[in-house]
Length: 441
Ligand code: TYD
Ligand code: MG
Image 1 (spheres, rainbow, N blue to C red):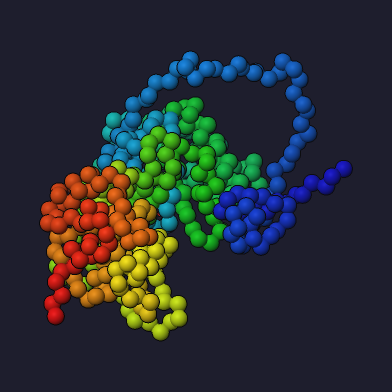
Image 2: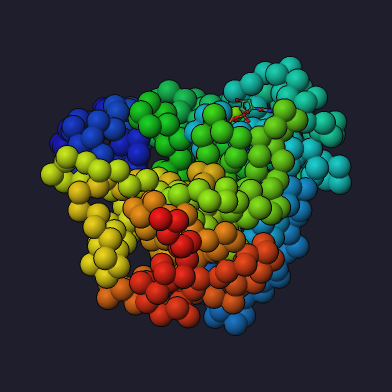
């Protein structure tokens, strides 16, 4: 008889399991993420007899009855936007983010607004009821939220099935544990079991459920990444806890577009939505060298962003190109095109680029803004006042139209921009000529 391993080693990043410990996960290639867990016991299974299984014939898609259910507003417009226009009833939403970024605060405010019209239940495993009460007092308007401090999965599921609130928040999925699973709370098998059970409860009892999941870099707590395929939506809450701005984005959304973006500001009275982030991120100081404004598209939302660049002489044989919020490959390409097609000698200089407010740009439409900031820093000449630049840069130095140029131009006009530099200028050299102020010398 084959020997059955009593212990399996599970990757805390991707969930791959192996029979023995390995330094590197064969699934995702991360190092040092495999942790020992008790293997699930496999009872003797008897093959199913004919007639035992309820096999239903498949349906044609045209015969399937599906009504688009009405979405619930969470009372937080930025959250609604990221969810694709509100919360879908009976859906399971995972909200991930580093500890301290404000997940509990955001969801408590949302629950407070929801509870005014429907039942909203907060299941807290991390904070005591009294701690939540103190936080609620700071936020205000959470009087109708129901709360339960519980970490045992069976009790949580039973409660949801019995109480059937419209919306439940589980803070956090890593504190839930089930006795049937031998491993510690927060381990991959516990977290996965909790999410699978809660998914079933959400669908069957019609409870829209937010799961809070911590993302930590050391593998001690199972990363929410192992849950991404299970849940309906994955929202990521970003921004570092030492700055007041937070960005919420959808990484996965079964009911709407991803790439939608919500911007918040953390204040003494909780998170406040920023309805006009262009105003916040798109202002530069007049006459400042190395700063340019671009118009990036985040989902359906055009957003003006300040880009800052520093070009500093270096003795390194391989000068550095460091970008915060921009793709390093894209940055290397822009620097190369600037050297080759715009006559900027950057070979002996380090180039640093930074995007305002911790926003991450992942679309080529911002290329021209990045190039303009670098050119301004390299030449020591400020960008013309009120200029906004967008457009994709091709390898030949020619500008390509950015997607949805009209919406971007519209946003620039709304912002009162005096000079919109776009693909109509045709080449990078001409765009830089038009965007940089006269050399004062
Ligand atoms: P929290 O929601 O507890 O973070 P998470 O659940 O993601 O771990 O938020 C923690 C931070 O937010 C904490 O550092 C304090 C700050 N904060 C405020 O600045 N103002 C507030 O009104 C609240 C409730 C929190
Ligand atoms: Mg919390």
